[in-house]
Image 1 (cartoon, one colour):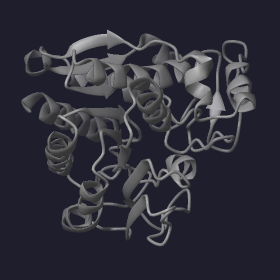
Image 2 (cartoon, rainbow, N blue to C red):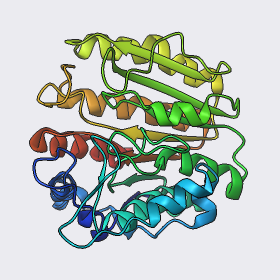
Image 3 (cartoon, rainbow, N blue to C red):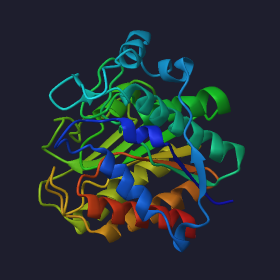
Length: 309
């Protein structure tokens, strides 16, 4: 078994307008970094659109209908908030981002891939049950988790998140359900203002806030001393990764100081835990990362670590 790379050209058609950091070039750079001999073993698959049923396991029907109904004319935009915009191609892109997450779960549960990397956009971890925000329209990781439970009977699903921004949407959706687990390292204080250590849900939420300027040592200590032990205690049947690469020192949107090698390190640690608890089954999906060079390099070491194992 190898690694499934799940993406779709429609995700490039989510046009956020000039100067927006969450732009199509992000995905182009990631995909370009995953070409070449080192990545020839990837199983390259096209992300399907999510079904209404898959989306409404997490979001209200009114939210799903509202997002899918936004279809402005080419060259026009609809602003949902100060950060989050939709263009003519956004509804399909969001549906395929969520559908790619679902496909990643199916790939590892059916056994034709051991792990999967879902390289799609828009990202998802800020989207709450009824609210798009922070560049996010649908909560892709949460949709994947609920799909794993509904289709595959996975009793306990963990989402782990190393994006520089706290995944308020995933936390909001998971907080009252002890069968779901969310662990996050993130800069704090920072957008969206959530993610304090005392936000614990029903004992299933573990946050490790990092002060601006924190680097590799603080990041690795947070995972080794706080987040990974909590993941061990939860003993998930599937691990889903919200893989944001904007904690890199080169990223313009926050102030953590990670190096590219840190993303290889955390990937290896998460693979270890997947092998310990769930037969190696791990699904990773692209979240943030806004310096194009750093994003491409970090995604490459992340996927490279998945392939090596």
